[in-house]
Image (tube, rainbow, N blue to C red; front, side, top):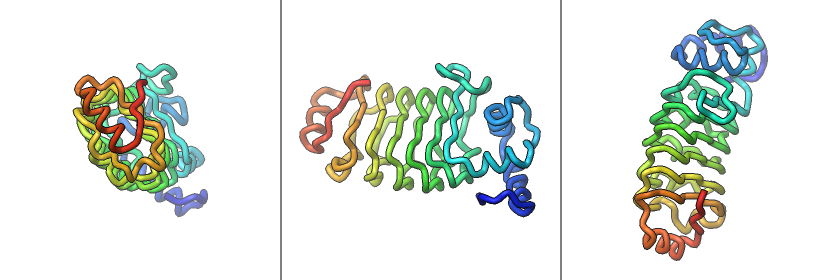
Amino acid sequence: MCYLLSAENIDKYKLWWNTLTDPWKIAFNAVYTNAYTTDLPGDDTLNLICNVSVMRFAGPTAMYPNMQTELEDMSGISQLNNLKILVVVNHNVTSLKGVEGLNNLESLFVFENKICDISSVSSLTNLKEFYFQSNLVTSLKDLSQNFNLRTIYCSRNKLENLEGITEQHADQLTNVICLPNELLKDRDIIQFENKVGIRCNKG
């Protein structure tokens, strides 16, 4: 997406808007215009949506919701390349497909969803914070190349081990909140801490 509010860019934004699913059109309108509609926003609002660096979509069950409907995917943000902080919490999202091209993303908050697939995060080399507690994730192997991570919050998932996090993460990754995870055994946690040099915390 581009930065300038020009006729050419607005045309691009309108084309992008037309590719969105109705739930995402409603989500953007709810957050940026306080209207629950699929209608095309005004030019200034479109420009803001396409260039903002921080977005927050908190579903109706969130502590501080800003929308009344629930999203089921991440398709709406796939072209928003200026994003540095993205919050999509308390929804019914099952996969992070759509985030893989967000190369500037530094913080991703997707807790309280139904996510079982985090493979799209593997390409986000600038990612520093990843909060995905209270989901259905079974493995951290997709994070094996995310060496800039400083915080992983993955408690209350379906993790059976912490494979994927290695000694190469240890210089940056100082905050791992992975407990409770009912399938994680104490001996595996101790082995991980001793081998990798990262403490497993509760949260």
